[in-house]
Image (cartoon, rainbow, N blue to C red; front, side, top):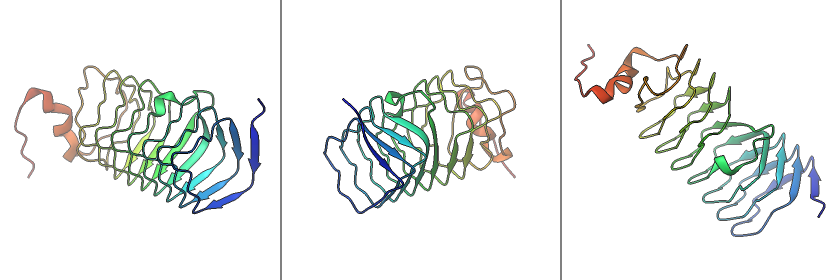
Length: 192
């Protein structure tokens, strides 16, 4: 089956919730205030697309291509990004809610997260080297055997992970975040 192609198109306030939108291709499209909650985007490709104010809660992205895709002020709660196609996977997030989502084993070097809520997000075995978490809340996010080399956590908050089981060479932290790196030792750290 040949994918349906949409190019240089703007979609506004469309309700795609609980719909089957698989095997489609979108190139340089902009989606504004669209609802994709509980929709199935399996095997679709989004190339050089921007999503603004969209709701993707519990959407299915099995083998979905996200290639240079920007999410701005979107709700992406419970999304399994690890099911997305790995081919040219490239995303950025600004002012998004990604709570309870998974990037398990995802290669996403240099990904930029800005002003995002990433509560209980799974980054287990993900390669997020040289990524930036600018003013992001990482409460209970899981970093296990992750590649965090040169990753910038200086303005991130509420992170806790073990430097002994993650690759962290060159990672950047603020003095106030040191307690998140030493949490497993159950020690009290006082900041003046």
